[in-house]
Every structure is written in structure tokens, then in C-alpha cells.
Amino acid sequence: MPREGAERWDIDFLSTRPPEEVDALAQQLREAENVVSSYSKASDFLAEALQNAADAVDARRLLAGEDAAVVARIHIRFDRNARTFSVLDTGTGMSHADLQMVLTPNVTRKAGPQQRAATSRSRGHKGVGLSFLALASNDLRIRTCDGTGRYDVVVKGGERWVHGGGQTDKPIGKAVANKPDRLHGSPTYTVVTVGDIDFDYFDVDLFDLECEELIWMLRTQTAIGNTGPLFGEKFGTALPPTTNIQVTLDYTDEQGEKTKSPIKVKYAYATPEELIPAKRVVKIEDIEDLGADERARRVRGAAVRYVDVVKSDSGRDVKVYFFAIDGRDMAKIRDARRQKGKFFPNEWQGYYVATLGMPTGVEFRPDVIQPRTYERRMFALLQDDELKLDLGRKTLAGRQKAKLKSVVKNAWKARLVSVVPHLQPLAQPADDAVFRALVDRALDRPDLDSHVPYLKHPREQLGVLALFHELLGRGNGYLPPLRTVQTGLFPDTSDSIVLPVEGGSNDAMHVLFGTHLGEIMRDLERDDGSAASADLAVVWDADAKRLGRRAVEVEKIDDRDPHGATHMLQLHGAGGLEELPVISLRTLVGESV
Image (cartoon, rainbow, N blue to C red; front, top):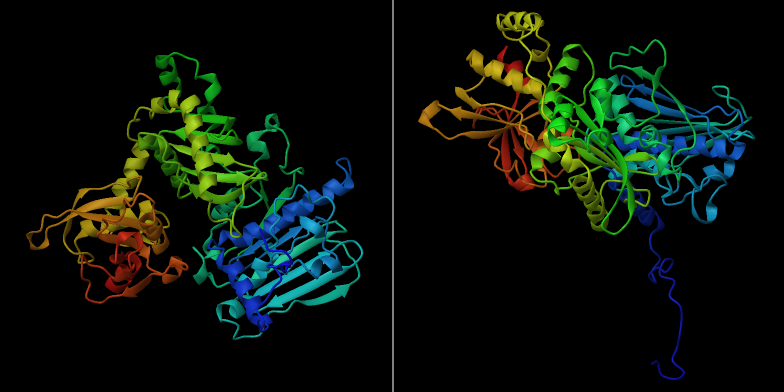
């Protein structure tokens, strides 16, 4: 107990500063650095802009009433040539008062004392979306109209100020007020345009994306991936989007060629189920009560779909979508689509997280299903509307990860275990004569023939693998004398094994394949450490920009040692390795022809 007459006082620890006044500018810089450093994915630029856009459109619909004739639209302009993108929404627009605070880190109008009407169902609430766009780019432009006035704001040099340690001028929003106007038939709207981004600090260069790759990203990593259609109405409507938004895209390629008309983009989450014929998809409830033999017959060559609400071990409800198919069947579907020039994502398996009706872009590994080959047959989306993530939405807290793992475990034990082990591929069809003729024609072509597309610029791991073995088999001095023992894209490490014959060595080598160094790093960073035994990496392009902000370096080497390497990746212990020799096929071919 305190003694009688003891001094008592309050400590306002959120406001207190040391006796010597903290440098206000230094404090602002640290806060800005914290915001920017919490993001690492290039897709976050689009995700933050589109989350705000979808919230604004939903808020306007709620304010107007469900029966009101409200233009619900989001239009995206993506220009690879100019390296800019813009997001237009016909939402509520922003007022003069809104603009005074929306760029300030950790201040939001969607929650707390500054909350605006009709924002209680918003997806975002941390107050860093526009702050991130302003501080992680060097050119942010906002054009907005709330019906009473139009406002134009320009912020320049944010990224240079943050990463330059405050050595350049602090970014300031330059605002101009104008009379209200209309855009896309709407009296209220917002357009956010972002450019001059340094992607050295992110996982990939956003403006490397082809049109179909961009659309897949929009529908799997941003608010455009509305999960409402996936889970349906039977699970209730708590917090999912309320508006069926019309989404369109204008895409300009790196040569400046623009799509002739806007592309309609589904306002719905994209799953691997869309990549296969609908008649091959079986609902789990239609087969789980069948006898084992009949169930096995029904799923041969089929994919299984399972949608439900599953309780975690702690009793929390989580919405789940599982899609399972034999990997060999999916590989055939992938090859068939690509031969026809159709899109197929680099990876279709995985376990991903959604919240409040939108994807987060967060992937996790449950590691609760044995054998692991069954786990790798599946794609899953788990929607937890109580989920709390960090600013950059990068990681799950330990308890959150444990909750989601228990959901996967419980879904497996209750429903999936009776079906997934029975998945088998269709019988191998006879060789297609046309396909064989194309293969024979390709085999007769000289090296680097322009009629064999993968030799020009492979964009997938399989293309890199094929080109590597093409050069290896030619024996024209491109590569040292290596002899293939076993080849394949293994689920864990995408590796191939080759046996050197030079010098009489009989040691097998573990080789990682990827289109760029970022893919190699993702293999090395896998939780199970399965890539730590790698002896060599083979990529198309050894561009250091693909390493993002990782504390690793790549340097070009001239003596081609060891194993014919063109580069050395200095890992400093990352992935359990100090360094890893790299063969860049682009460098190799460029020096050899």
C-alpha cells in the first residue's frame, strides 16, 4: 500500500516526450519508415488503392439505400509503358475535411472518433492505405469530388524522402479546389493515380505483369476478389461487400499498345476451379456418402469442391473453400491451356486467407495433413472475419495461424479424408499425332530458332527447365558436360538432378529452377528447409531487382566456375546457405551467340 500523503499522478505515455523536445521531423520520418517497411509485395499498391475504392462504392450504396440508382463502378488503368496505374471509383468521394487527414499515417475515417457514416462495414480501418501510396511512390495524384467540390492533390517525392533518410524535401500534398463535376456519369468519385515506384524494395516489378497475370492478381490479392459469390448467402451477410460492382480495366503493354476497349473483370475471387471444365468438378456432399469403390470411380479424373463453415479448436467459425485434384491431371490441364495460348497461373496449390469478403494475399502452410502429398493436391481459401493483420498484411500472428491450422485439420478429418486420397488421374490418352509432329519439328530446329517460343524468353519454370536441357543436350559448349540422371519439377523445391561426368565425379547435384531469382529465393525460404541442399540454381534472368529487399546480393562471374555458373548469389545464411552458384540462361545465350 502507498504511504499516506504519497504523491499520485497520471502518465499519459502516448503523449509524453523526453524533457528535450523530440525533433518533429525525425519523428515523422520514423513513422513514415514504419509504414513503408511493413509492406513487401508489389501487389500491395493495387490492393490498398482498390480496398479504398470498394469501401467508397459500398458506403455510397448504403447511404443512398439499396433501391437507389447508384453507379457502382471501379475502373483501372494499368500502363506498363508509362509505368503508372490509376483506380477510379464512383463512391462517396472525399471532402475538403477528408483530404486534411486521409494521407496522415494511422488516421482513418472508417473507424474511431473520426468515423464517417456508412463505413462500419469497411474492409480497411488502419488508416495507412493512402499513406503507403504517398510514401512508397514518388508520384501520387488524387482527383476527387464529393458533390459539393472537386479537389486535386499531388504528392511528389515520398519514396525518395523515406529511403533517403530525410535528405530530400519532405513530401507535401499540393491541393487545389474546383467546382464539382461528374465522371463516368457519377457526381461523386475518386481517382487515385500512382507512378514513379522503385520496385527494388518489393518482391517483383508490378509493371512486368502481362494482362492475364494482372487480372489474376486483381482477383486473388485485392478487393476485386470479392468472396461473396464463392461462399454464397447461406453463411449470412455479416461484413461481406454489399454491392455488385462493375469492374473494368484498360491495359497498355510495354510497347504502348492499349486494349481497344475496356476489359470486363469479374468482381469475384478467382480459384483454380475456373481453369478446368465445370463438368469435371464434383461437390463433396454428392459423393462422400457413397461406398468406397463408387466414390473412387466418381472422382477419377475429377476435381472435388468443398464449401462449409468449420469450427477451430477454440470454437470460432471460419468459412472454408477447398478445391482438390490430382496434380498429374492439373499438369495436363495446364499444358493444354498453355498450348492454346490460354492463361494458367504459376502456382495453383496453396492455403490462403481472406477476411471481410476480400483476399489478404497471405499464404500459410498448415502442415497438419499426412502424407503431405494429399496436402499438396489442394487449394484452400479460409475466411476469418475476426482476423487482425499487421499494417502490410504480410503475416499471421501465432495464435491466428494456430486457429487456421486447426480449421484445416478439422475440415480434413470431418470431410476431406474420405475423398482426397481417392483422387486419381484419367487414363493416359494415346499420343496426339499433331502434337507429336510439332515435337518432331522442334527437335529438328537449330538452337535458338524463333519458331520455338520457349527458347526466346521462357516465362515459366517449365520453360527454363526445357531450355536448360535443350542446351545441355546440344553439347555445343553452352554448358559444361553434365548428364541428366533424373528430371522433374518436384513439389517442394522445383528441382532437377544432374550428374557431372567431368573429372570422373559421381556426385549428384540438386538444382533449383526458376524464371528469376525471386522464385529461387522463395524456394530457399520454405519453412521445411527442403531447398537447403541446393548446389546450383538455373534461371532465365539474374536481375537483382527480383530479390526485392532481401539482404542478399548477386554478382556476375567470368570464369564460369563452378558448374558453368554465370553469377554467384551471396545468401549470408539465408535458406541455410552462404552462397549459391547461378546459371542465367539469358546471360549464357547472349554470350554464346
